Image (cartoon, rainbow, N blue to C red; front, side, top):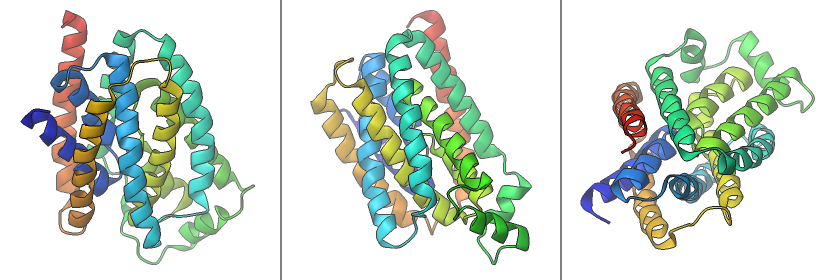
Length: 267
């Protein structure tokens, strides 16, 4: 791999370890334009890279008790169904459509990172929850509650997105966890990593046998990404996440615009 691909791998892991999202959004363009992997193969390989990296990061968080073990299985179980369905669609959809949709997802992620709703801001700090938040939190401990139904629906929706365009969906999972289950932001990021790991693993498995995989490129990129995720996790308490999110959002806008331009021009 050249130096730009190595830096992209480090960036993929760093952002994933720091924010619990955004890994595939860097990995896919890097595989496409820096390592010159075919589009459908790049989608599948980016899912494999993120699956391994997110799994290692999630295990580390789980050991520290940061993963919500009641909400995560529900979200991930329904996410698996959506992801597998999405991979079947992704194999059939033309690559140009997938990449255009991926670029639109990047714009949506950028908008989401720039915007911080009041409801999310109030829960993100993680102080003693209000009476309403406490009810929501305890309501999600009941598997048959409306809260869990919302978690399940979000899981299917994010899973479909993961399967079709190859993104882990952490930028959607984190706010969904905070707003639907009322868990603090730190726990939501850790739980998101566990869900991303499951969704990405299922997505990668769904593409196996349907698209060619360059195992050497994937292994090298994954190794660099894992190193980046370790650094991201260590710096998560030292960096201002809001400033990082704003900078990353503008980066997404630039890359999404480039992808659309390449699609339109056929480059």
